[in-house]
Image (cartoon, rainbow, N blue to C red; front, side):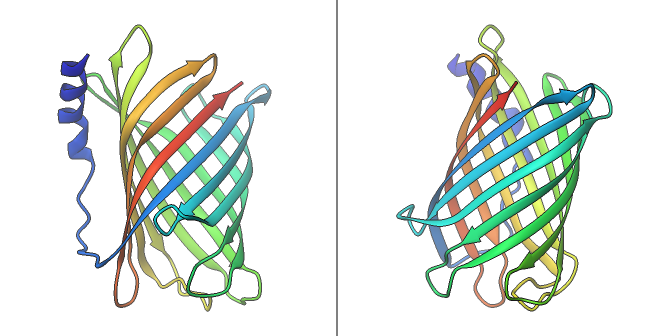
Length: 226
């Protein structure tokens, strides 16, 4: 088992790129993501997400997200979704604010390298903040690789990378250009019928005017497929 994990790390860890920024501002955080997904009729899908994010050395609830979405399965491995996300952010250095986000994304296979399956998600978001005027548009591209390390139990080692790019400036903060970059490595473990638990380490580089920020995140995701 240990040898299998080490071999998997050797294959997947190169997919995680080291952030090019040398960030002076660091934070330890803990994110818990709960995802439920399943069919409602033929190829039509429904999905719901809830995510609390503990920030400032995981001492306080800095952000809360909730998102319903409708999807359509184009084929066995390709799905398109349209969704809405409500985001409440409570930073320490300014007043809290609420964001409304409408997004569309497609999830699709890229290919395989040996036992490593590679998938991608391409997302476009339209974002507004209560009390602000501008609409901010953001593009996100995620590439995910996974490899079985225990065929009998269905355990996988997982690595993914996601880049965020703002397509315009907005009066409430976003600036055109690269916004942030997330890189994750962890495992995916079946814990019950239709339930997968995915704990791991998530690194987030946030690009800001002046000083950038680097977040070290203990991430736990639970997927429930019904």
